[in-house]
Image (cartoon, rainbow, N blue to C red):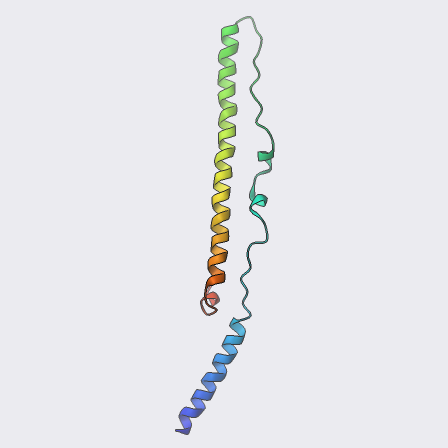
Length: 111
């Protein structure tokens, strides 16, 4: 009987130490806001294409249309990048919230 009491005492001491160590684990929310993930070029306007003035007005308008389509492609790329950044930021923050909500023993494992 005494043998079990010693084992129980040692087990209790080990669990108390483990709980003390585990309670010191902190999971912090990301310090950087989502705006820090945004590319700096997004603050810049995408300029309109410039129409050239040559002797052939039809050619000028055709070249302008091609150039304007290229500028639209750049603007759409930036919009797609913005949506991708927002999704990644939300996933990052959701992961931090999920980790905070886990019990202490589950926070010992990485990820």
